[in-house]
Image (cartoon, rainbow, N blue to C red; front, top):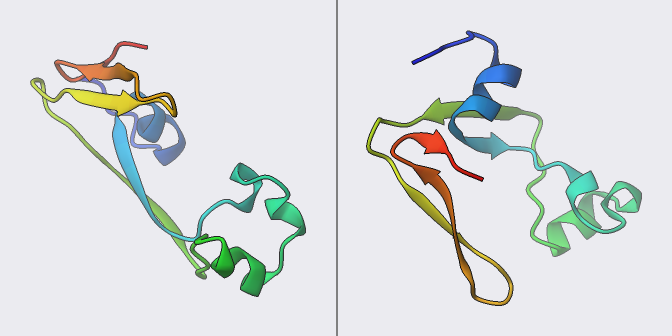
Length: 81
């Protein structure tokens, strides 16, 4: 029940989605790629990057590792990892 009104803090204190430009540094050698190479690797290229936060007290989110193991990330509206 805390809202910081600052995207940097709020996006890390809640669940959020980012629309627009992807961060190339999240991919191996992404910083070295040009626009066409990024697009070939399914990296979104855009002039904007916008985050929005969402959630509720009963929201739960499960993730899955490369090995197929399920990991609980959000439980009852709170991070649990």
